Image (cartoon, rainbow, N blue to C red; front, side):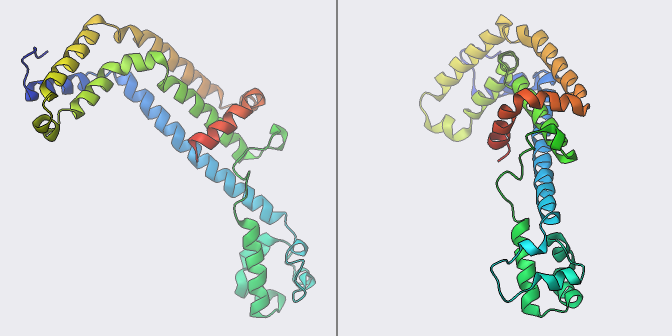
Amino acid sequence: MPGQNLDRNAARQWLKLQIDKEPPILKQIAALHKEARLNAFKARDAKKKRSAQHRLSNTPVTALLRKRSDVNPMMLLAAGVATADHILELGASGLRARANIDANAAANWVNAARDVKRAQPGDDVPAPSPSDWCEEDVTLVRSLLILESAGILRYAPHTQGLSYASDRARAVLKGTNWLRWKFKASASDDLAANVAELSEWISSGSGEANREQVESHLTRHLTLVDGLRDPNEVARLWGYKHEELVTLLREEIP
């Protein structure tokens, strides 16, 4: 490690070395957390699409444009067009030809069906009871459970303890940029103090003392992920964690 009379380049090289020494398990944990967030995003979007599709398929044409006197849903029913979903499948031109209606009426029906498809509050929230779940509900709850576990693992005190040396080295390294070094009078003294503090931390073994606990926690996380292959386990955990998971959905997957 550079001594008290260290120069900027020597300090930067030493700090980069500490970053390079970051335990691979930390990179693995960060990657798992990133993947969990991405999967949760995908699952949330799939659930929203499923909710909209379910609404379209279960909204009869008789429930659309009820206050309009210039359209008649019976003309659509007579032509075999029964739901908002069917209207969007046909489109304005197809609906006009199928039901023998004018362009203005066809456009009104299509717009009404699009209103049904438009996102609504709760579209991305799993059904309260697992008995009412579809595949997208199971996938979303599973992804939230994994994201919750991965987040706890990544930001646990023992994980942060193991990562302190490399995290601190990155932070100090940012403070050695050329402009800061040139124009801040105390830059050299600050750097020397930070390097000395970090060197002492590394020498104490305080960071490495967390490794075994981090490895054990990672094993527990992976075991949980494997167990969540079973939809029944997903439903069981949802039974007493649904409030926390919905909060996670709102805060982490905006």
